[in-house]
Length: 198
Image (cartoon, rainbow, N blue to C red; front, top):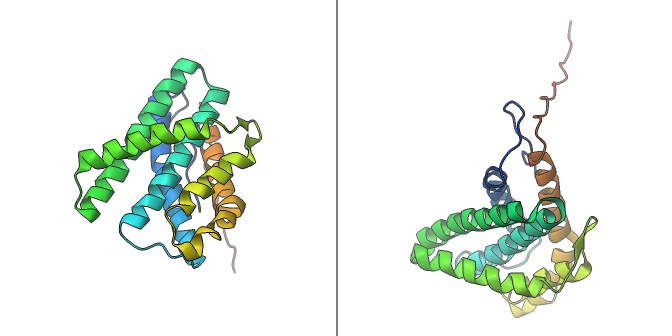
């Protein structure tokens, strides 16, 4: 999956809100990609509540990953703005999609998202995240949460899919995106190699 992780306008420092606005779009794409990959791997995830329950767990995981990176790399006051805005932006997108496709109240969907995020933040707090990334428990807890929404046939097998493939790849994408978004100078566009001919 290709993601844009840098600014294209002239270089300046970007605010925590601007960075989290940009990241919110990327986080939603990463979660969608993880869902598609999991379904391609022959795990049964039905379109409907189960589909959105998978998405919410993966989105919350990614928000908490981004929050740990912010805790590691930016001042505390910037982290508060960054994480709060990221949670709200991702929660709004999730709530809009869930309410539109399942006919549920958008405010209730958003509130459920925020409530579950607060719950998961306390639960993931038991696991560490350093310059090398999350510890095994961080990944394992995502796998446990995803397993809870899977069928009995898939709940045991989903653990390896999450820990070995989806979660590490997603973390790498968030880390890479935030490195790019925190750079003040825009990257120069890459030149395409031109094909020669007679």
